[in-house]
Length: 286
Figure (spheres, one colour):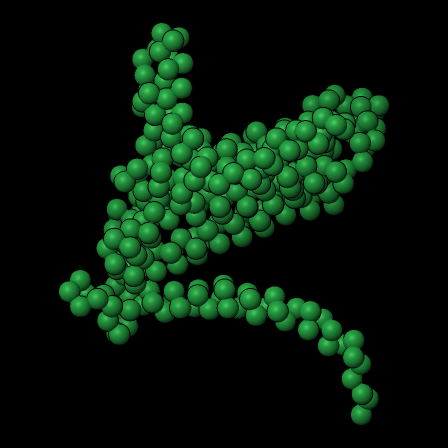
């Protein structure tokens, strides 16, 4: 029998600590949440040690929960589209800059990540409030004050501000791998700047856009601080709904059910989008 090489176990030893952390911090809590979602709940006695599917039936048939799920997906999708519309041109301009301007603007893009999301959200609440700078500017221009705070518009504005770096960085990284001479070659062959951008540059950065879109959509759909502070108590999203069920209603099984349904829905949407974009990029790039 051939003795086992010492190097053959090296990958397992290197991956072991990370795998243990992943199992202990992700898979085990997720499994416990799934188990908890099938427990019955009584408002007078608490969590019951009996199996039930009533929570799932309640969530998928009650219009109240379905409306919150639809609002969550709608806001996450709108945030992703706005981040892509702003972030992709921003990343393209950033990739064409030269030092020191590139370093300065990259720091401006990444800088908001150094500030707590709660602090940034409070800043937006002061800007968008009835006496905030936005309404003061509208009044100076002769317009009536607008109700922006505690609306979906306020949530989308703050989420775009929070999530934009997660769109810019992957696209900028993909553009760094693209040879600028390829775009110049398209110009010399008679293509306009817009055609070269659409037919040469965009297919090359589609995977960067895919990565950024998945990150932005996933984080936006699971955001808690922004909708909790800017949406108020009436305009709820999935994360705030789970929070209420756990800490206010104390109905942990129902909260676990909502969390699992949102997780499965996000995974299905993100996997379908991933396959669609990868298939399109494969056809375009050959």
